[in-house]
Image (cartoon, rainbow, N blue to C red; front, side):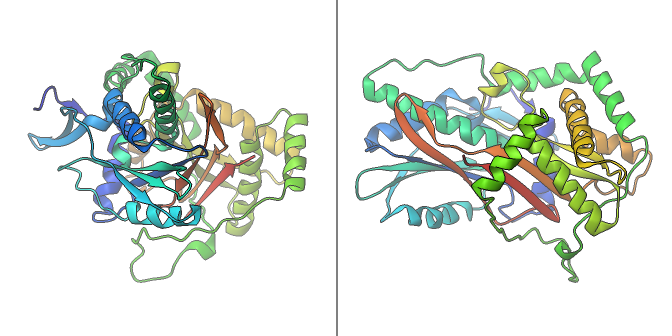
Length: 385
């Protein structure tokens, strides 16, 4: 049964543009895995997952074309069938992730998510979720994992499951409409107009450009590098002594590198912004994330401490005005230059990925790479300590 129809949010519109450009790919699949360190009751784990699905309305949203416009509606909820896959060891988890992520969702028919439960010979195991980016972001994966483990623990103890009716993606849809007509929207627009009173040259890493006849492929490879503990301890000490975040430190280092290899001192780095500005939104599953265009001016006359302090100051301004969506910034700039394709081709992100404990259960989460990117190069920093 179709009820009220809702327009897409700005975050969803951006994902839809990527979906249409790279049609037939799995570029918008996001997959998260949680491995629980305790012996599991797998029937209760299935039940916990279904409870979380029913309690988070973003899982029940579906797309429809209405008068040539793409809209969404809440579908009826029912229990989802979840397979339990037996794995020999933790090394087999990556293979299952790759199988799950290879699925290409039909965005107008059927569910746009899939859960799998996996079981090791010692009856420990966990679960993974593959979901279309239209209805989830990386924060959602962490939040949903936490909710499933919390709900499972409550079911195990025979406790009541409480649902927070205020934490709803539908409420975010309404809140975004209000924002578009607010003074806050006008102030955010003015801020970004000031940042981009001129349009900088696009920078990239020369070796990341593949010289082929067709540069529209989104296929990508991932390389993983570890920073040793001694070096990371020194970085943390530097950041603490200078009241800086670790992310600001790495952004400054990365910006200097980009400037050196590209020969450009004024450019833009894309960086994902949570775009959840209050408690309720941080406890709501769905697609909220915004990619902010962070403008960098590398002044070779500054020492590193001064440069990273400027990065930190500009980051605060960016965060204060993060609700003004990237697509809006592009639309504003294209009124001045209709040929502008994008502001950046390089993205940098930072996330904390640590062991978690929920109601006495210890579990580890991780995000799996889907093998695609729309940028020339993405740098993802994961804090595992």
